[in-house]
Image (cartoon, each protein chain N blue to C red):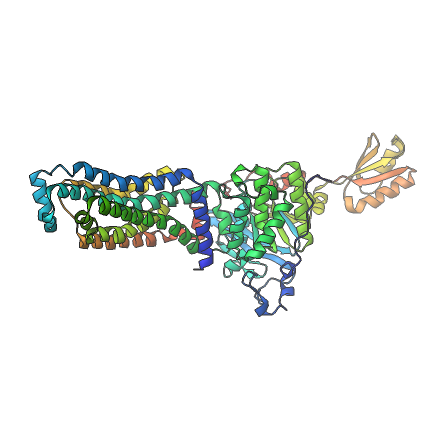
Length: 360
Length: 262
């Protein structure tokens, strides 16, 4: 439990539902501030919040992002990992219709990124690298301004501003200029701004950077709750444990997507065939010899609490190892595959920096 | 263009302007000096006739000034020097506001967050342009009206007629707003390429070079511009401003703002 304020669920109005679920609403019932209707012929299926096909962007001769093909399901938290200059920010700018692609196509919430850019911008919330606040203006005036730019009516703005300022523990300082805020407070306010118009898709560029542990915990809770509401979140972060904890899938980006998978599969896939066996008694030479003769076992060595076996195929050879242990009369307490950390995977995937890597 | 979005930008610009004391001082200070300067100078020179050659040259350029007594002619001459100073207000005020506004956004990195909303760049720039141009135009007009009122009260109808003649009206009501527009265009163009408001203002200050030249030429008695001349100058400045706006339109694209405004 962290001591920060608890994340309170946002409203559960129709804008949180999958795109196609909104269609039954009569057009006359739609207000100006609601997001525009989805083009039913768009290639995005009802389960996809983001779809890209060979998306790329170059600046001059350099490709910042290249051949990005990706499908994000609704409600998915997708982590984008990569070193500085790998193209993460360019990817976010592309998918939030801030800049146009040099190649490929993409759809966000069913809207074409190029042809329906205004619609895309009303459906995404963006937390930029820098908080980007008007420092002479108060927190409330900052949010009110951005609420107006999102076309929210006065009453809706007022309700949401209060809700988010209270949520992020900024309500008591709502009238103070944001220039007097700490980095963490500014970051929380910027996140509130990204959420103000209730977007179904969120792009968060390093949301917990510069936050103290309490504030970071609040933000992580918020991200987890937003996922539960069916929002899709693209999270750029350098904090690998954060990505592992929050993300359903992780993509490693260095100009192009190098690998995409769930954190568990990434770690398991990276791990070699080492299996740790914890025993009630120390492994003797006879047991070790018996195991070395078992099929699929490449090597065995004693460990302080048991032994470590190196298998040729961890997935298929583990049952044979267990059978050999039982046959040899070993008192097994635990059999556990040694998994790699996400950091191991990161360095394995990223390797050395590529030549001529474009700045994001 | 949607009015609500322009109004939102305008409202925020004004709110920020009112909180920037340095900028406010630089906007409110010069009009006071420009209003009081000629009024006080007129009192100083009113009792001292101009050199005969200069007086003859002035009357040749403005036959209606022949009706003024020598003291009033000297005061009219001093007032005339300040007409061009009134044009510097719509030149400097919009330049200051536009550069502080755009460079302020660059420094605080707010533009990306703004452009991530459905606002159109035309609406954003319209809001900024109005916020910069209106105080400049209003500053020039209010200062002129204050000056004319003081002249009427302190110097009487003869000199009031001089400062409310068509040349003054054309300069303040036509050329002033045109200069304000050009100043905004220059402010935006220059601010997009530099990161320091003072540098931007120094570069943008080229706008006042022709004005300073005109002040010097007029002070030397070389020429007096009439209403038609100010009207033509207003048209020329407006054309230059529109050409600058067109030439720099690529800078106003969403992507250019994000990737080229450094």
